[in-house]
Image (cartoon, rainbow, N blue to C red; front, side):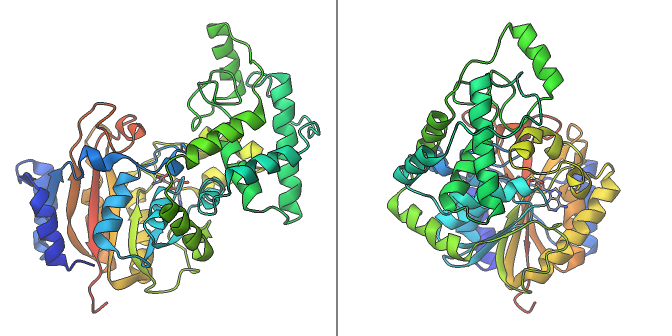
Length: 418
Ligand SMILES: C[S@@+](CC[C@H](N)C(=O)[O-])C[C@H]1O[C@@H](n2cnc3c(N)ncnc32)[C@H](O)[C@@H]1O
């Protein structure tokens, strides 16, 4: 792991714009840091070349406000070694978790949303295509579970019946604790294919898969587009997506995923209360917190929750839905205290923050004091250069709308002396 001086040199090699202390907002931050005796740099660049941009296909599961795998990859390569433990307290679809596993690290993932584990854990214990195909052949697709909800605005009746059968089968296996990694893989893929805007999804044309619209809005969309749901073959779609997810995995990556799966820990706690994670056990955290009530994770995921028997009530309440900056900062303060406890002396935290409210709020100005108050040293703010074209925006398209239009990572280290 590089010493802090090495890290600074490494980043400086790539730097073409150091922070200039011209704007009042920046001056406030710098003044604060100076008063605390902290020297903080801002490093701006495109931190990897286009050659390095290709990500493993296994990441291709959509989730609101996810980051692209190149972000955790950059910090995992820079700040950890093989077999080190990499953690994400706000794991989402598991981008950090899976990238860490691919790179031969141990992983711990935490997210208050139960969908996070459903979407990430199966991608560590990847079954073979043959196993998926054989299992799909065994599932009784004619045994639909009862009609608890009208889904006819999304699905053709035959597709809906296949989907209900699959849901019934998976529920039964899970309730009897008989589900294995193949069932969990099928659950993960099906959850991802519930709604979308192409024939690769079970539904008629609708919103992208991570933003399910309400039944009423879908009815309006169907009317406006003059569409009715066509039949989609559930098994064929699951097989096709499985194949896509596995398409560029190397043998080494598959081995790394399998090894990581054996020790991987998945938690569903509040990020500030992770007592299951031992003190001083994590080498590196790479994470992106929920931003100020920009994304309604549970509303966006109501169909995914239905498929997985997750009650929506309460989920929203548990999630961090801070409406004011003070509330957000205080929540993050508790998260930093917990991160400080679990980080090994000499370990690192890479904390992604965005601009909210059209750049008026720069969250790093609130995050840096929180981290420092918890005991961390702030090593700098890494800014990825943003070019707003589809191919060169490497941080995730979702991050460029709804008020979050740039991505910065605040880097913290914990002193060797602890
Ligand atoms: C910006 S997303 C993280 C996305 C992730 N980086 C990825 O690539 O998928 C923030 C996540 O924080 C989770 N979350 C919200 N409040 C939380 C809390 N109090 N504790 C733990 N997780 C929380 C949400 O469920 C969401 O998955």
